[in-house]
Amino acid sequence: MPTLVHLADANNAEKIRKNGLKPGKIQRGVYCMPVLPDFYVTHQWLRELKASGVKTLVAVYFKADENEVVWIRKLGGMHRKKILSEAIKEIWDAENKEGYELIFDTKIEAGNIVKIKDLSQKIGWRYSPGSHGTAPCTCEMCMRGKIKGKRTIKRMLEKEK
Image (spheres, helix red, strand yellow):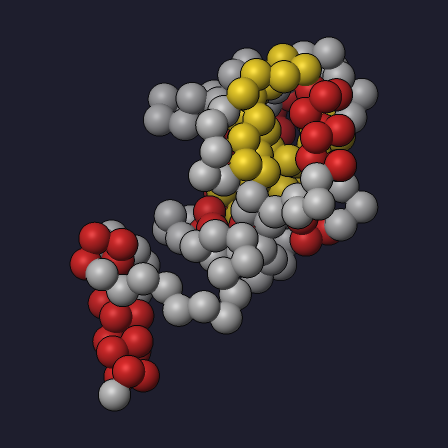
């Protein structure tokens, strides 16, 4: 049984430990990544998820049957259904593993949770994989609702001067 990791709000850690992970009403699945030798790639989504306003995320490690059907997608691509073992192999064999996600549309039982771990809150990419060192788009549409969006626009406009 492969081990996978789901990033969750630290405020929900005890509920998750007791009840497991279940698909939400808005997020219609349990998003996760396989645990890979590269710690960064395994936890790459952390900084992007923090942009939604969650202050602290934890890693929820769980086991799943390798024959279970999951959705797989690389950021910007279409979701496809695959057997978990094939989806993990696709990520493992990919030249660039950043931006992948797996989605379970079923509940992960509490008995399948191996551990819940605190993480450094500075892991991963923001905006998109490989965007480090490039300026974010500062148009009103892209910055609407972003944490510190107005401050980012102001900073970027000052750099242009």
